[in-house]
Length: 397
Image (cartoon, rainbow, N blue to C red; front, side, top):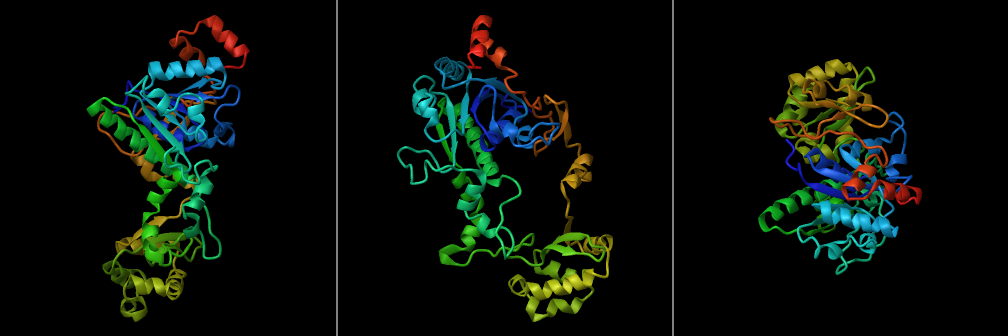
């Protein structure tokens, strides 16, 4: 199913937040034209060389796109960008610095009179509303900085040291909310025929995802404590070592499971009546004592034996996998979730987007080489072969 087939997105994007949003639009069939700097491209292309010499972030967030190299600060480059948007675009997505799109003449205010049906999504760190700029509007905002500003880092890590997430979670949050806002704007356009501007802030996206710890610390209350890989406020819920050195993740959610855990996993049914551990609040308050009991019990068992007891007791559990374990995950293979996409370095595996449809796969086209579609796109705009050569010689494309 590709419900966005026939829609065109012009993306002035770099790094992760906007590319992740537009890749998901591409998954649904949209044509995404990615504007890149001549000779350099999206700087995420240079983050690493882990995927057959290509950057892991770029491969993840840029499949099914067309790459157009264009110096948008050059007068002719700016003309071509504007023509592309006016002639082709249903949606413009950009995560340039605040005010940059306006300086290029492609802001919502500059475009709405020419294309009142156009949707413009502006992604920034702290929001870019000229009427309510706030003191942080022009502050640089990278993923880790927004993780920090949103309070995420303060509740992540161990008691001794806070930590960032192992993936760009602030970028992902912003990309997800940009994607859902664009879909909502497209639905609204089907009703009233009008486009609109979306002002998407990374801080506000993370603020939404921080809802539970924010309310946990309501009216000045203490925030959730940092607890490493364990749950901060539910116990036992986290990693525990087995006797063979492996680790099992397990989680209890209610008192019925606590009774089962004591009886069938720890083989200590009377422990369920211990006043220190009656109710989740008590178990959390006495987590160190309870952890010692669990670790002692598991020390006599290997990983397979612990998991079997947990399964027999119907206690939720999981394997602590690494990236190799995820590549090889039996469930993903059994459900047929892997596909192959092309890159300039050859084919690479790719997971299907979450969600299964009964009427066809999403769009899964190649990760583009830098400028791979420049000549074809300029030809669509009526630029002749001779001018294309001149623009290339001048460094405009």
